[in-house]
Figure 1: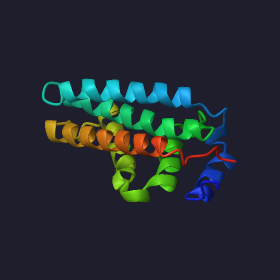
Figure 2: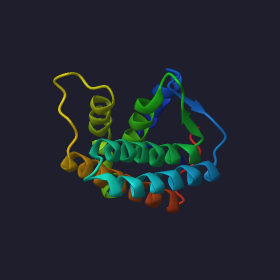
Figure 3: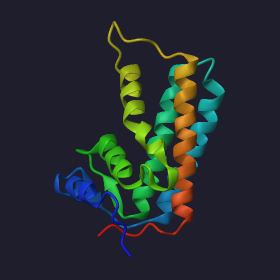
Figure 4: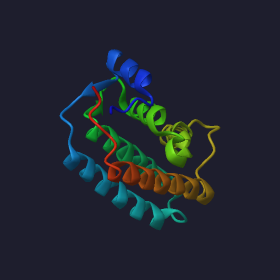
Length: 158
């Protein structure tokens, strides 16, 4: 049985050259998850002292855990699609699946990260609460990604 949830979104991302087919790889997925775990560990240490850094690391953890799901499906973001394509693909396929509503938070976290990385004069700074929320999102996405990968239900996207 092929994975049908979110198929039309992924097909659009492929047609628009925002995602590419690649060789499916559990090894790449595992490497991305290892990175995500390390990012979460470092972020947790910086929530109070470096909330902007903790938010950035949490976002990177979310992105890598999400990309791990795509890696086993034989998908990877193109330069054109970038982070947005990864988020769109995982949200379409996995948000709400088996109680995995955490994927609904990804675009908001991406936008918050962008306001932090490219601030305007009127942009609010990042505080410890912002960093903690980002960290909790990252932990939730990592947990959801692990559950999906361990379920052996993800197949190559064709």
